[in-house]
Image: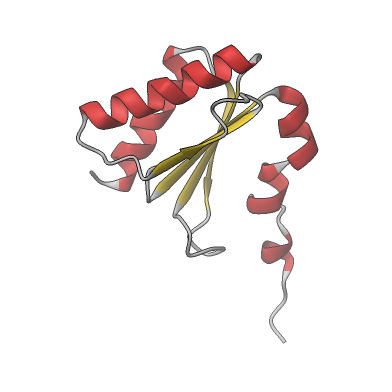
Length: 116
């Protein structure tokens, strides 16, 4: 599946379970780990788990291999690794604390490096 279609599938899976503040960040120029990070908020550990389950279910239905998951038991910050796309689902306080958008987004220190 092409990366654009995979991003769309992930966002739709998150929206289906009422994930909020969904952000898609292209990180191709910042890391070799993945091409895209999708970050979403779940308001409880139960919703975080449901959001992750939705992403996994829809991905598997489309024949996409889920490479790994982490954090689903605690439900404060869960991750789904789909290879080209990594999905982070966090409760609001955890998301505010780690602020992945600033770390990996347009405001990241990697974007402020100047050529010498």
